[in-house]
Length: 444
Image 1 (cartoon, rainbow, N blue to C red):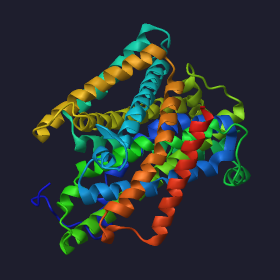
Image 2: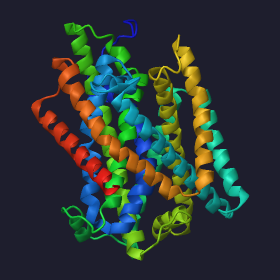
Image 3: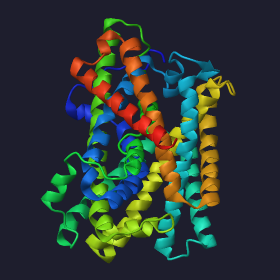
Image 4: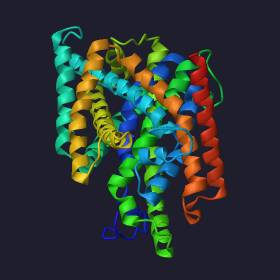
């Protein structure tokens, strides 16, 4: 990271908004990984009682997200390089990278579950039997399309694709919530009020799993610095030399990153709330039993109840786009993480960035092949998605620790946030510890 790419950050809000992007990519990943499936299932199971929990889950993790982004911009290193620099035991790599490796496998299971739900979308669209060979064909074609697009594209394609998908499905989901008011499942102010008052259902297990993947989950917290680097934020700041000019550039680009993170938080929080309300009002209200085999068919009723037959087609097109975009973004990020992990584990060495980019492209192909094998070998999309949520929830406390370590021990003092922000970051970390500990103890 030399000085040739150094540039000043925009000052006006309009100019700053033209430089955002990593957060929008994360939003595309968030909406499909947790919101469409896990959040809706939570609403279907417990009703409105955990609406406050959904809002809290989306809001509180942004502080950790921004701290990881702050470190990436100031130091110019990838997420795994950052985690590998943490103090503590090592076995080739740091203890935190070893924990991430276990979570990485769980994340791939989660993606394989989403791949299966795309197959269910095509089954509904073409009215084919989910048990027939055509279901396998839809899964393979979807995986192939994702692998091909990522093989030929780079950051700009991912950013533009993500923005288009987020805009479309967010709009249709919000429209479905408003249209719900004209049906027997209309939502009352009392239901919303009761959901915003602290309360817990008898069975809290699924709620804590959902916490791991709603808003920015552990995967998105790891992905975010990667996309910040690819966007160019750290490159624009330049190599750290602690000069007054460098500090001012870093502070300015961190401000851009803050806007990016909070804009994306608003987008995915609104969409998450909409999914939860649809699940609580329609699926919970009707007593629907959502299983692995009927997942997409049951979720489609949220739209047919509000838009009629047209809603069925709106849901199918939207569900395909949001699931496809999530897998598209996550596969691209996971391929980059695989390349970084290969270097850290000393399996491969990259003489040039072109060598790394080549591995990333071929890893994208390898990942979609793996996802296809896992899903077709199990056929349980809901279970696979929840496995990923469990793995991410366990990883969250360690990412929170890493973020605070970087904030207090590594980041330049003049780039550190104020006291109020730091307090909220600590609260965020403590909430992640509670969730992770609960998940661990619940499985003993």
